[in-house]
Length: 127
Image (cartoon, rainbow, N blue to C red; front, side, top):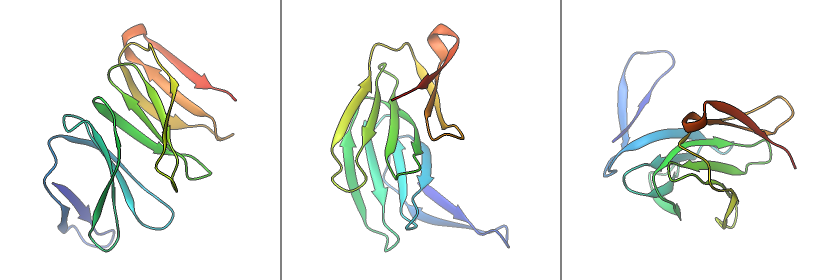
């Protein structure tokens, strides 16, 4: 399941259950949470009202980051980096053929940073 912890108190609240192996989550500007379910092979949006929407099917998603424009970036342990449009949920593969990409980030200029564990390197995706 997914838990929420308050900032002012050390209490945990269950906000969602039923995932196979959730490995990462990011909060969108509107308060919704984007969650990747690695062994469930899917990306979900957990809405503030408690409902859930599947955004994409992707093989073993491991990490998620949200870009400055709201774009959702996800890595697949199969070697892909994908962008999910936050409005249409359309998924586009940006890179493929990576070896065990583990870890995503957004740099100060808004560019996607990727850790490619299988080749011991860090990449920056430039437009």
